[in-house]
Length: 325
Image 1: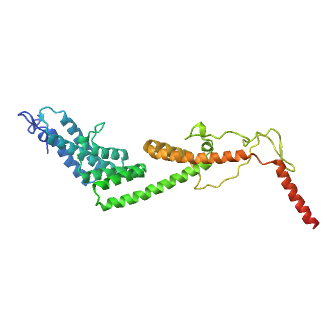
Image 2 (image 1 turned 45 degrees about the vertical axis):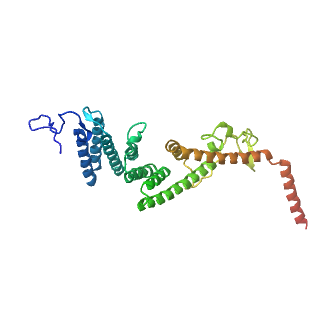
Image 3 (image 1 turned 135 degrees about the vertical axis):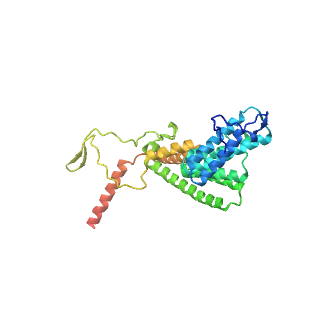
């Protein structure tokens, strides 16, 4: 263990180089980073994840500072050693964040373990061995599924992980489980969209997801505004403006929560824009079919009152003939 101060209070520089340039692996910062990694690993073994996060984070800061140190003789081996240590720190952080259910950090650190923390990513930072890369992909998949319910992204990561470790049986089982979860989520989304289409007046009018070109034109089917009292039955008149009493509808599991659905659609648009576009196209197609059906009925026009009267007269004549018979 490195002790930065001597008994007299002065700085301990026994591990520092005094004789000129030196390899990165022999620098004090590198050695301190390795010490933090080992300390963090011991804390993980004890389940002390929050404390381990501090050790791994400090390790990353030390490795960043090392890159700016003067007097280091950089070699390809030195650069690789630093990158591997940093990737290891991010990989271990992803585990700690999963254990503490910090899903966004878990996903981000798993990504950085594979591609580094530069923007845009530097291909040279891709230093993880295949089995370690499979671990990073698996942990990112766990964050996506458990933290965000994004089963499609999780499934993609799991399939990529299997490429690196094709004989991993537990990974194959997780892929099968995720495929079922993805299928179930898709069916639930279709059910919600179907309810959204049939129950929402806004969607039927083309509002929300679509533009004005898909909104049905107003025609003869528009409900007329009553201006005269209307006789409902003998002694019962309905006055203009009187609100009709709505029938109480018992609660149902199929009732659509439009606020919740709108929130889910907005989340899908941000988190998974490709899936959002697919759903948008599906809804648009369904809406166009419903509008086409409405226009078809509009073209047929309202039922003829005269024809309706003839039918009633015919029924009356039949009843009279039956009585006479």
